[in-house]
Length: 128
Image 1 (cartoon, rainbow, N blue to C red):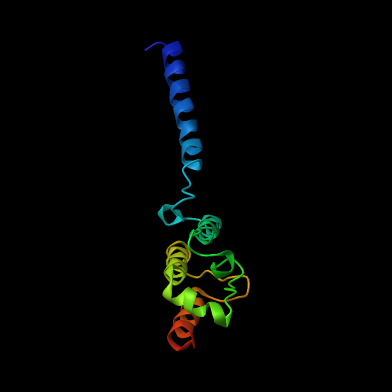
Image 2: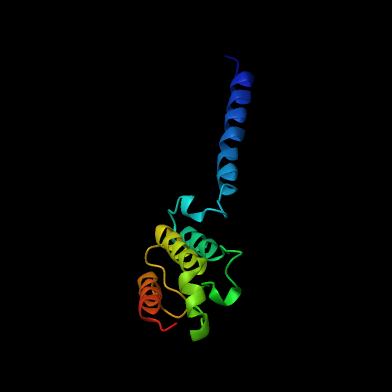
């Protein structure tokens, strides 16, 4: 093989090799963050953030969990939350967060388990 052919082959291989990282960088799944490969803590936090950004058209904003770890549910809204689709939506969001970063802490230092227990206790023993 001539040196020019070898150089061209090496150049082609090098260009193909450079394309691999750029194609993987754009493959972050924003819709289903639990499908992302979470090798680095930054990717885990980013995936957890997008889990928390999932919204349900059936749940108003105050019945939706956010990064601060606060569900702003008044006593008059407890029945709507617990017996409607919002409770299940919130539990699904928490499950997504747990899948991508099981040691996630919300801004108020609550853990996934803390919020799960609060929801379950509030819905079991809530007076509505």
